Length: 258
Image (cartoon, rainbow, N blue to C red; front, side, top):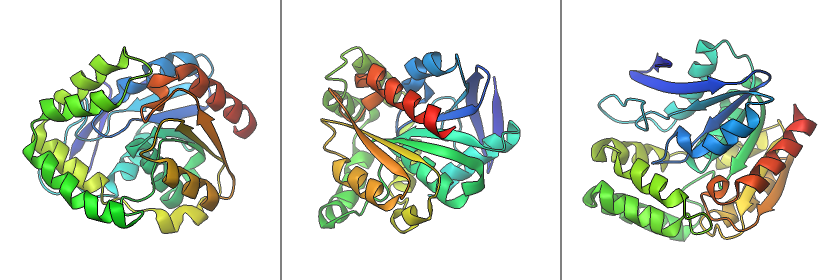
């Protein structure tokens, strides 16, 4: 099983294909298989690496508090393990925020970033500041099966085949590990660092993704060398809902940027 160790966790990854390195980072509560369609598509031309974030999929999570900055450090540790000096990083939701932080704190390792349904803070406005502690508290009380059902109910409506995957992957998570990871993820903060990003950035947002629309526009306005594209017939699980357009937009961006 291909894995490496960093900061007490054994982290699982898969790689396929040859060419310029392209790293895929999944969203919170999901795993690398969120990217199966894109891995098949891009491995024809690129060295594709997909990582299970700590506490997700086949990656472990050590006891104790999870640091909000550990996720981008795990990405850099994987690149070191694989002797990759520089890579394209593509992430959705949590994975997008990790890509942002990698571009801020390890800029010399990042060729360009692709952000899908990404955010840069969980305190974007007063509404988010009020809702966040309620959200954390309610998730501690709910069993993972309920959390899996609620997430799948709101996603995959444009691709019903994605719903069983969402229910399965979320429902398989350890409840304590998920809540520790979720607290760390929702403590990540990158708003003030966006202006430091100098690499090219592609921002993709589903036309029905009301969860991140305002932040996506904000990110676009504050990363100088960025472009924003709307993905049709897609919610927050954008690459699952409309993989064809997502792949087309990423391919065009990579041809210009790599």
